[in-house]
Image 1 (cartoon, rainbow, N blue to C red):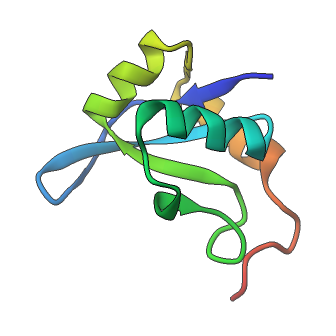
Image 2 (image 1 turned 30 degrees about the horizontal axis):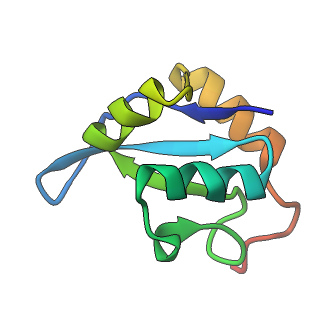
Length: 91
């Protein structure tokens, strides 16, 4: 199993942000905890269909050093589609 990050290109509140995803939700939570990211930052069903964390560029750099796989926009979208929970998002 693996953990993935895309490029930190999304600007919000003075930082650049990206997505942290994993093949398995438990693995995602363990990795986020290693980064020191609070569980309350988790985004998944029912808010969004794909379990993930939004992390800053600084956190992304640490994630890569800890073994996260860097992905292009196209790759992260493919991973998002693979790990999403069907009908997991409340509309």
